[in-house]
Length: 151
Picture 1 (cartoon, rainbow, N blue to C red):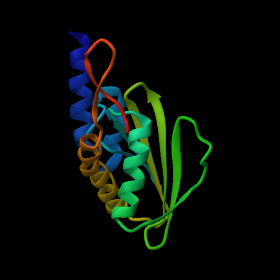
Picture 2 (cartoon, helix red, strand yellow):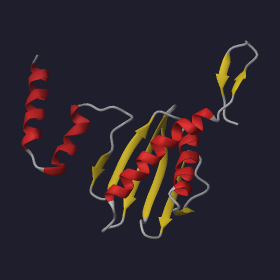
Picture 3 (spheres, one colour):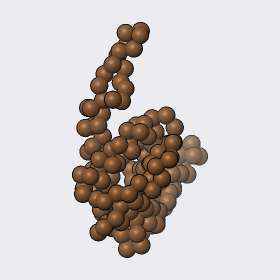
Picture 4 (cartoon, rainbow, N blue to C red):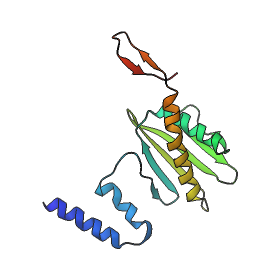
């Protein structure tokens, strides 16, 4: 019962804080993997419940769709990818492995960057995931169970 009172108190206290100060309390209150973008300074992060390889492909597809000039920063990464976009909306995008079927996407914007454009980029990723998942063909293994595998 005491923990519930503390959580309710934290939520009430957080509602009194102005602006983005409330976001600092989200990890302590509880979180959901997919659906929330957390900003801390110039950096935002969002979790996706998909494999890192799938998210890296979707991030590159989103860059092409938004006509962003993306440069791969470190092509030798085994568990993720790192991109830098040039032009009107410069951003650094890092996709990293957290655990099986859990991937973290971190976008860092320039000092006078556009947070709304970063949010648009996340929305484009969200919209492209079902398209990518639709392109994964079902296959059968030797036990005659239907599974999904990347092409």
